[in-house]
Each structure stands twice: as structure tokens, then as C-alpha cells.
Length: 219
Image 1 (spheres, helix red, strand yellow):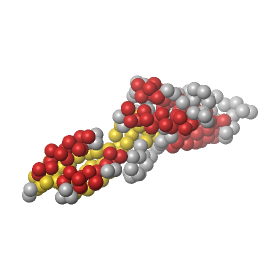
Image 2 (image 1 turned 60 degrees about the horizontal axis):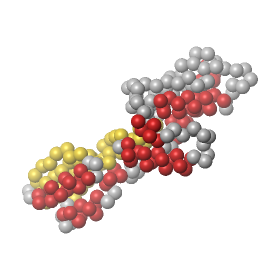
Image 3 (image 1 turned 180 degrees about the vertical axis):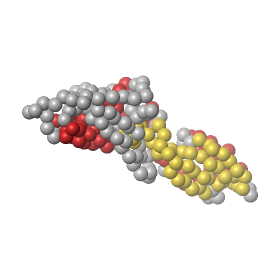
Image 4 (image 1 turned 30 degrees about the horizontal axis):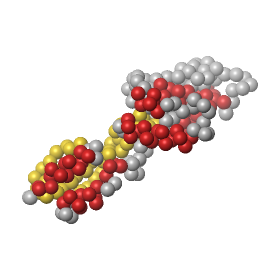
């Protein structure tokens, strides 16, 4: 583009740092691809401070235009309960926003496989004991990330915006409803002084109850 080759690293730095901090709820972005489309270089004002700022502004605008969503960790749970408790445990899983993958008889017991948001499993051990009178057991492991429902994401975004409202310029944080209703194009790019090219930001390690990450559904 119009920028000297040696300043592209400055632009990239600003974009990658912004993706690490997130633009909506202070959470890292994943599955993001940005492309430097153009920029302007000034012999006096363009430096190692100005271009990271330009890159940060560009990736923030592009991410908001793409309609970012919050992602939450999903676990796969293997649950073993007495046959008489099968209906109750399936109802409990559904109440936790879980999805039943299948059931299998096991000598007077039923094995239930399900995927459940990790945050919803916080009290599951206590509830399972109560439902089965201590005869139930379960194991869980990380499965994948999935989009958080809009009404739950709204609570997290609103809390983040409230905490940062006084430290942000007017108009710096977009309305929550506009974010959650924004259309999601297959890709987004932005021209903002020094819009930067940046690669994928690695997804954080699985773990951490209730952990969420910002994501963009880019194809």
C-alpha cells in the first residue's frame, strides 16, 4: 500500500493488542482475520506511537461492523444415574441450556451424554446428589466454544460498558442492543489511517468456569 514497509509492524502491533483486549466486553477475540488495505504516511507525524493507535482504531471499527458475539466454553458430560431418575436428570440438563446427545442402559442405571455450558455446571454435583440421593455420578471434559445467547451476553457487555464509561470518550462504546442485533457479513475490513493486517489470535486454553471470549463469525 501507501505505507513504507518498516511501519507495517507498528500497525500490526496496535491491531493484535486490541484483539487481545477485545472491543466489546474486554475479552480476547478469536477467529479474526484482518487485512491492511491502505494507509497514509506523514514524514513528521507518522511514528511508532501513531500507527499502533491507527491499527487499534481500524480493527475495533472492523470488528464492530462485523457484529461480534460472545463465546462461552461448552463441556461434554457423561452422567450415570439410576433408571428411575432418568427423566429428572434430562429435565435438569435442559434447564441448564444443555443438549442431550444420547442415553444408554447400564445394569439398572442410565448413562447420559450431553453438552452443557461450563458455567451452568457450577452446582451440578450438588444437584445430582440431591436428585439421585447420592447414587449418581458424572465426568466432564472441555468440548468447544459456542455462541452465548444474546440475553446473557447483554448482561456481560452492559457491565463492561458501565465500568469503562467514565474512561471512554463519548461514543466510544456502542449501544449493547445495536451490537447484538448487528448483521454479520462474511468479512469486514476498515480503512483508518493505518489499518493493519493481522493474523489469527490464538484461542485461550480451555478452563476457567464461566469463561467467555469475543469472537467474530468470519468465513
